[in-house]
Image (cartoon, rainbow, N blue to C red; front, side, top):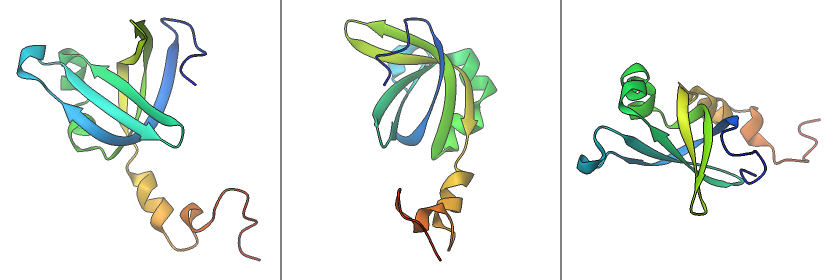
Length: 110
């Protein structure tokens, strides 16, 4: 789906954090990979933004990231502008009777 917005578009993505990287050669840049049911997205968090959203970047199991779409050499990234920890939504999925009890298209209890 990230092939639709134009280069530089402001977008929001969300997903489970499947990878965090902070290479020593990256001068404080953090690379995140998020996954949802449609695929994966790579996120770049610059050092200054990392300092602002440190807790979410380090501890979040599921994140919503708002930022700018960047494409280079057939690789797509989101340059983060805001990072929100939405891990609490995972707990809601596990709650008995919560949305995780039903498959999409399932009419649910009744």
